[in-house]
Image (tube, rainbow, N blue to C red; front, side, top):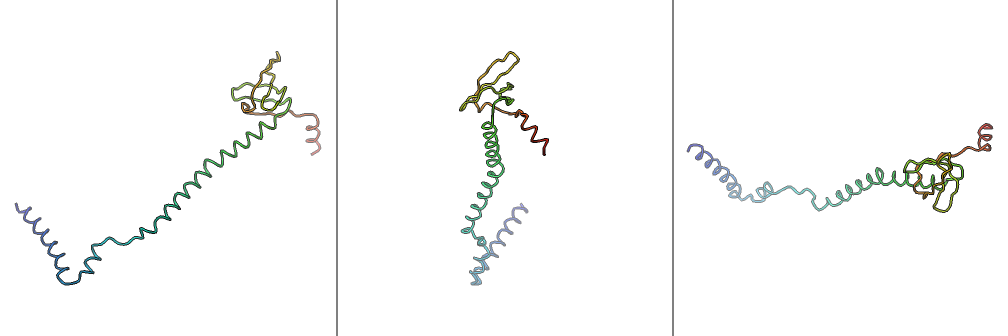
Length: 141
């Protein structure tokens, strides 16, 4: 009972204190004290634009750009395939290139000279065969 009376008295005292501010005629100070501070809510839109811009830049430099470089490198590798190069396909088949057409490659896969035809996009790795001309140029350097 005493606790309820104490709580109601403290509530009444705070209410009386806030009413006394208005009773003094100084309503501008009371209104300023109770109002939320102006934090530039209208100018926060550019912060969100900056945050989204930074997020896009991070995605570009961490995900998009390296992937494009990798695709470009793979495309150059596939376009540089020549006769007698040793290749490995994405399926793990190794062989020597016998024929190169527009988008097709024919490789020889074994001692039995089994010929298998693949698309260029199926090539994973290319090992260039060194000819005698290339070896002679390396020895000169």
